[in-house]
Length: 332
Image (cartoon, rainbow, N blue to C red; front, side, top):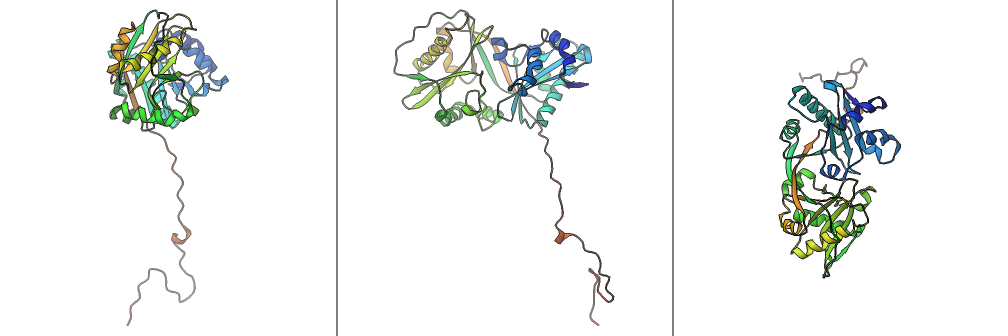
């Protein structure tokens, strides 16, 4: 039996959150708020309505947590517990939680449900794929253990924060650099983080920097500070290493006011041209995550159909001598 989180589940969630795993790399790397706090505080804050937590009491208990994306028909499975072991009962509970989460997402008119799994977690990856999630790209994680003081190199490129007027250029840039398979998985509207219009973005999300090449936007860097690490996501249509280096150094400089923590940079597999610049800056490859999507079945309410009065059958006439409808007459 799987049910939504309530106050009586707090101890179970507190215990299981230490045994589970994050299914979103930036939450795993930056030290996101604990699942029990996200579940408890959800009803009392305006952004809490986007967090849904479901509980299973079988096999010692299990939890799954989903976050809806702001103003989009999409959601991310961000946490699942306990960790899958060589235990058929726990594996079956995982599948049940994932299926239940997908069903609830469909009831909320979510069209795409995402999850990320480390490549080395082959058993977990198999469980997620068994319930209909399909891999559509990979994300590589690069780590800079201790950022040094950044000296910004002088160059011809301008780096600034994006404005609402940049939305159309960002959409065009995303369409130009993204493979067709990824666009199909993430929707034509552009689910790629950082691309959706500024008006749709929630506070406390990524900080953003764009690199200008003349009047055009050539790339974007997303910056998210965290308690256990800071996360960067770099993408764009770069022509040379100097453009990448300028944007990367600006991002690192923006983190100087925060606690010294490891800095991670996420790259998708089709962004290979950025890797040499990262390694020269001291970043080292650590893990690779598979990004998966499940297209949910959205429940739709069919309107009640009413027949037009003109098409409804009429009662037979009761006037003496009248010819009933449908009667056949013949001339004699």
